[in-house]
Length: 337
Image 1 (cartoon, rainbow, N blue to C red):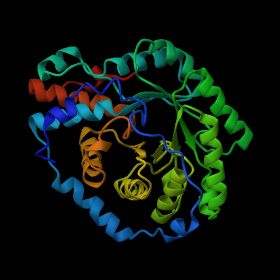
Image 2 (cartoon, rainbow, N blue to C red; image 1 turned 90 degrees about the horizontal axis):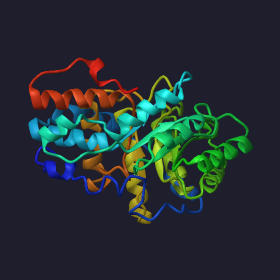
Image 3 (spheres, helix red, strand yellow; image 1 turned 60 degrees about the horizontal axis):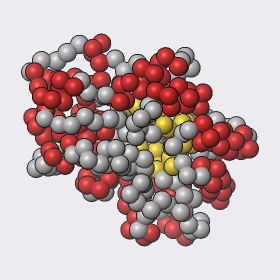
């Protein structure tokens, strides 16, 4: 990874064109539930944990290469606000940051064109102010749905919530699966639920949130990932950000290997989104390194990879400022909203 050409990361030609998941790839149509494939999925937990633990210790990026990869990370952020005290003004400030995530002076010093984040992620009620604030850009709006974060509303209400968010202007829908289906091994119910969500999304792309910290085992994570892809998910996502355990490297390794397996068997590329707990630039670099090694360069684009984060952007901007000036700025200078 240390030999990566920074121009790969700072190429802005695809930023406006490849923003939505899968715009340059065929959407995942799904496939019939294959229980033989699902039952064959096993996970060697100790091997996964060893592989995940080895990555941060042996991957180091410095100077221009680090700056280039941090800029790529910014283009893959779903800038998020999912708080009970969200207001239209907060969302407007968030969208202003999404449109210009890095100070123009920093970009000029780095010699790169303006960039944007991958998307803005909000609750349904905040879609309208986000849409107005993002007018004239290619930045999509992602709306969390289906009884987020617990996913325990009646199915009819969850489907209606998706339909309302799509009608309001959301181009991406982040749905939450029913964890009880995974924990009870009712894979048919999980498949049927995900198919219904996919149908309700229509042309909007669907990200399936697995809430991996509540699934009990890495094998359950792998099987749930596979079933959501079989049911038509465009992205699989680790967490709501509200669980006690959110995105981790072992979970990421299991999920992206499920994506690789699905691609090798079907030829369909599925996106991946780790969410929750990723707040430092060095963590973002570790995730990008794992994606590059396990899935390849094609997944290092915002149409196939996203970070679900809010505070991450501020830390990345601080690191970029240090790269340019040699000094760290105060965190309050990089407030997100």
